[in-house]
Image (cartoon, rainbow, N blue to C red; front, side, top):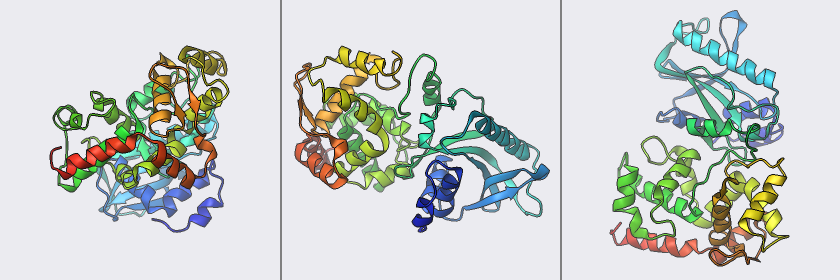
Length: 380
């Protein structure tokens, strides 16, 4: 990992310089970028900054491996205006043209890789940019949209189906987060991460989602035991698994954590906006019905459905409340009941205290123990 964290922290986390510095100084960010391109990282990749091409066009990063240009990368900050963002798309179009015409930086003895790509790279807080909707633009065919999470520096490609969903923000829907969680508890996501890690250590290179669910995963008997497909979808959306359904580099990194640490990380870096809004209401109105909760949330957003929270009537809200109850243990309620008891507010606690609370209250621990037993007995 790059070591000059002080220099990075001295920059504002919404500036373009901050984003560029993450790439310059953090080897893990470089690794995640290469992984997001569908390539194996071996440390020989070169991220060459500020390379000038014809017409004085300067590329933020020229990514080279084995003397071949595999990608040209354009950085933007999370709070730029629409004009600057569109200018960046225009630059990407020129980068694609450089590849098509084999135009190289002057005096550089390189060639382009056959599977060359262009990259638009920006921080995760761009979803809160009210100046424009990143999904409502046309991008060059070679372009991948890569997002770096400013909470943990994990990099993921924004998948095409998510882009379609994000395109609704500002028109028919409101948006507070781009992170999509299907109808699963966090402990189920964690178990799947652990099992894929286990298979990877055994030398498995690829799995079939449907077969793995029917033949192995359903033996664990979790609360959503017939919905492991949803767990795969969520992990893929977060960038934790790759096209072969095995762990990505970011997936390997987060899978190292124990379950409580995993939940704390997911809360801080991915689901905090959802929890802030939901908990802010139910802490004052603990017996509010799901429908009333939905309406109250939407009233704060000009009565628009909120993406991934209220845009499926009350289904997502039910799932979020189940996560708060079963993974964090911060609320109590019986199934299909609106009689809730508030145990604690997870966002008010220091991380160490929160992790201890999860260890104490989460029902996920018993399912993880059951999973571990199946693995130890070689019956999974």
